[in-house]
Every structure is written in structure tokens, then in C-alpha cells.
View 1 (cartoon, rainbow, N blue to C red):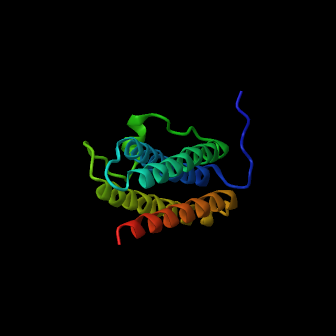
View 2 (cartoon, rainbow, N blue to C red):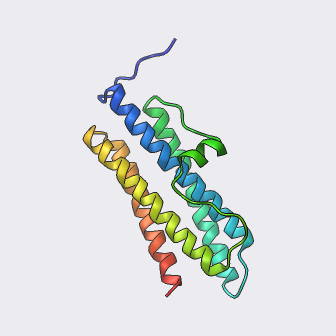
Amino acid sequence: MSISIDIGIDADKREKIATGLAHVLADTYTLYLQTHNFHWNVTGPMFQTLHLMFEGQYTELALAVDLVAERVRALGFPAPGTYQRFAALSSIEQDEGVPSAQDMIRKLVTGHETTAKTARRVFATAEEANDQPTCDLLTQRMQVHEKTAWMLRSLLE
């Protein structure tokens, strides 16, 4: 027996927000996987710096996927959790092979900016529904992604 959800946001709006958050989750997980891959495979004179930086970044992303998925669940919907669903929902392009360290940095800048843009689109939906917890979560995620993109871009100057 299912208990109805009565948190002050109607089911249609909760579903729209959860659908948007599924895209944020997919972007976040895809970025996590990409960052972890780059952590394992980076080479060159910046190896130690990038290896440690990427580790910090993928660790933060691993924690973030849980927060986003739990918000989807709190809204009453299943969170996507397979590579197939993430690939279908994500806006982040994946490619094969091992790019140079500089190209890894560029790809991660793009990934963080893309994830920030996805979160910003969902924010408008959550704000319209008066969903402060989702707005708070998305604000925090945008701050992390924008700051990380800035730090990565700084390595390319």
C-alpha cells in the first residue's frame, strides 16, 4: 500500500522537478565517471597535481549523486540508476580513448559548465513550484560546478 505524498507541491509539479533532477543526476554521474577515468589515466608533467585534483573532484561528485537521487526519491519518483539511463539523460558527451592532460582539463571544464546549465534549467521549474529544498540543492550544485570550471580553466591559461 502506497502512502500519498503531501508536501505542498502537487504531483504534476513534483514529477516535472523529478524529471529535471534525473537529468542533473545523469550529468553528475557521467561527469563523475569521466573525472574518475581521467584520474586513472592522466600522464605528463602535471600528473601529480591533476591526479590529486581529479580525485578530490570525483569524490565530491560521488557524494553529490546521492544527494540528487535522494531528492528525486523524496519527491516520490524513482531515481535513474543504470548506465543506459544515464547515457540517455546526460548532456555530457563521452568519447573513447585517453586524451592529453590539457584535453582532459578542457573536457572537464565543459562537463562542469554543462552540468551547471542543466541545474539552472531545473532551478526555474523548482522555483516556480515553491520547492525550496530542490532550489537549495541546485544552488549548491551550481556553485560547485561553476567554481570547479573556473579552477580548471585557470590551469589552461
